Length: 102
Image 1 (tube, rainbow, N blue to C red):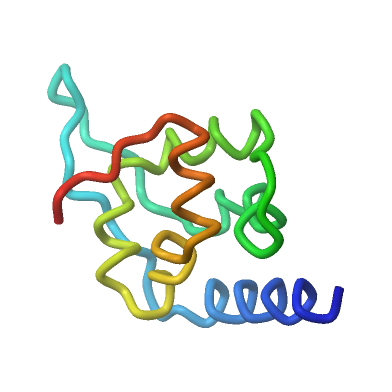
Image 2 (image 1 turned 120 degrees about the vertical axis):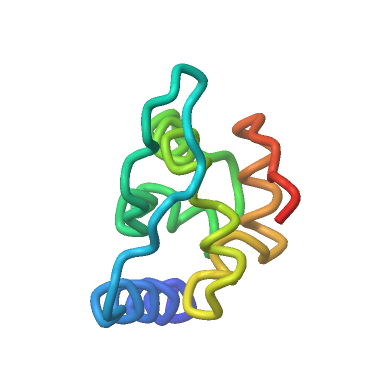
């Protein structure tokens, strides 16, 4: 439980202290610009990332919404752990999301 609390505090601190939001560069199927990348949208995924297990539907929905942002998260040292850690990879697979080649 202490580890989960530490991960949660770290995630909130990093997300809130970031001087800028990561911007998605991908464009949707019909030419619309993808929404801004907001790491806090993945808040519902934090228990899965920190402790493992099955992600919730809300987590998968938010993750799918943030899919254009994954490369930005991977490239940003402040957020890469939340996409590249073993539990995060399992979560992404469980949500049936393909990680793009960055």
